[in-house]
Image (tube, rainbow, N blue to C red; front, side, top):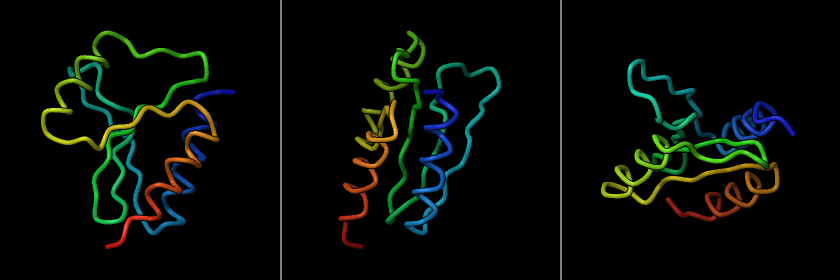
Length: 94
């Protein structure tokens, strides 16, 4: 399965929850996550991978940096992982 398919599924599911899913590009700052998600009064950093993909060293460094500020960081590789994450998020009471 292509990463693009997982990304499209994430975007669609977030929007169904009333959230927004922005593509993130940060020129000259490699390693940033693919998406920033605003949903259920939370901000999430989402790295998308194909099922066989692995995080680069720069992505791992960014993950460690973000963890000092928030625990809202997820790496999602399959449609099922997206669905499980969406289910978890949808249960948050705002």
